[in-house]
Amino acid sequence: MDEPLWTERYAPAIADLPQEETRERLRRAVDEPMNLVVQGPPGAGKTAAARALAREAHEDYDNDLVEINVADFFDRTKKEIREDPRFAQFLEGRSRMAKRDMINRVLKESASYAPVSGEFKTILLDNAEAIREDFQQALRRVMEQHHRTTQFVIATRQPSKLIAPIRSRCFPVPVRAPTHDEIEVVLAGILDAEAVEYDADGLEFIAGYADGDLRTAVLGAQTTAAQHDEVTMGAAYEVLDDVGHDDELSAALRAASEGDFSTARSTVDDLLDEGYDGEELLQELLRVARSDYSGETLARLHRLAGEADLDLTEGSDDKIHLTHLLSAWAAGHEQLRGRPEWSGGSPPGRCATGSRRCSQGAL
Image (cartoon, rainbow, N blue to C red; front, top):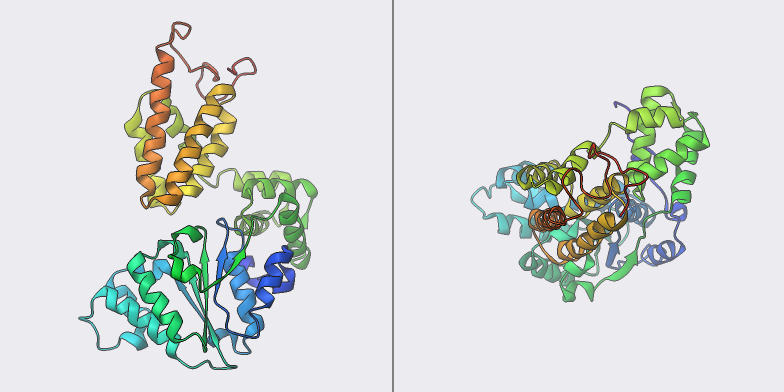
């Protein structure tokens, strides 16, 4: 896809954001440097909301908004950080500096530079739940030192991961996942502007496919339009049905239920390595499971998922917690296989093929 992404071309202004509480809280930070924690689930529009704030707060938006994704630091080598054009000016001649010191220097220097326009600038720290506590302490000191000229906007899906001194210095801005209807309204507006034909079924399919993730919905609509010059049910299904990893997730659950825990774990590991985070992958597992299981079998998976979700929120290693989920899922099926009424074959709640539930198969 060579044309600009629609998520960028149709980036919302504050007035375009669907949630009144979010709009009101952002407007308070337009005229003065107020530190914010923008919090909400993946794809809800946290980054878009922060950019909307910066566009209204700064005459020179391109220079007075500094965006730093936490992955820019913690998932990169020292060389990659040093050669990033955004950070190179701060690290010139400092090749022997420890990575910790490099990160601290970039934060301090980014905050200390005078704004190009107006009286303050904005630093957006995205995916901030991944910042280690020792670096959060350094960030707290930078925030205190430059509070008059620098506004920090910390975007995170897990505000509980932030240390108390940072949370106490920031005004919370909750961003909930958009509803199905809200996603359809946004898609219709974009498609009208692009003069792309669409129908209600196409919008409904993409909104359902996105499952509350507006970014996924917009990109899904753009991909469909690029391949078919229209967004209809048939076109969207053809394009998006092959997107994602439904088959792999279904196979992982089936492998675990059949005692092949190694294959199930390997599949989850591979998907995490491809870019899923733990909570997203857990949601995808449950979505796929709703097509494959029913009754008590599905309820048991949801109970296990509830425990895993808490662990993912409080823990730091997604692989460990999702592996534990699969292990418990496999153990439950092992117990079922030992029941007298189960003489082998597919677990209760599944067809003999093991792929989809039967109308008579619910527990």
